Image 1 (cartoon, rainbow, N blue to C red):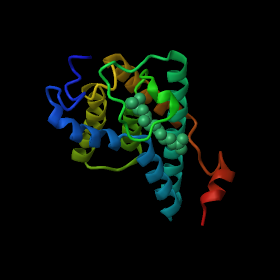
Image 2 (tube, helix red, strand yellow):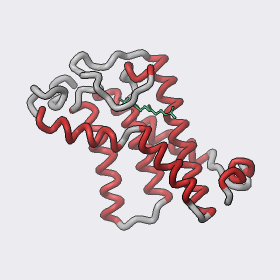
Image 3 (cartoon, rainbow, N blue to C red):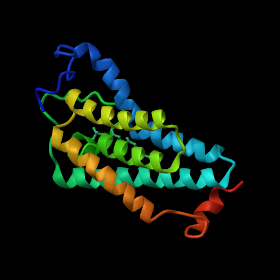
Image 4 (cartoon, rainbow, N blue to C red):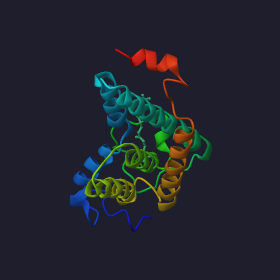
Length: 181
Ligand SMILES: CC(C)=CCC/C(C)=C/CC/C(C)=C/COP(=O)(O)O
């Protein structure tokens, strides 16, 4: 993983690509996804869109909690070549196993592919985005390969849990009442 950390610092082999990698990092960060989903939920005027967005919000929160619990249990330190200059972190983000960005990328990717009607090129872009976010974690020096691979598996599996516990106006009427205009 250290050899793949080619954007770990400005002086690294691909150091000039670090700013771009950090933009990719923000595209998979929890804050924009949570705020964007919450904003969409407040703005949506169709009950179908509200149902999907409420479940996405639930999935993102579940993902944050699960990753925080696993990071807190495993306590694997980040690679020594990582520079801790990440946008908004919480205390357990000093640990690296699993990659929160990789779990979110896999989870969001499955969610979008299942619930949004998209043309094939856009579907391919969504999958590529998830892969690039994941690979960039190692390139930035934030993670070891195993953190990212496990994160992808965890996010993939977590989507199945979300699908199983799908919130609907029938199963969670009180939640939906909060958002109905
Ligand atoms: C509402 C609330 C508690 C928001 C917190 C959002 C937040 C700070 C998420 C952390 C995202 C993050 C830095 C994950 C770490 O990703 P790794 O891939 O480096 O494990």
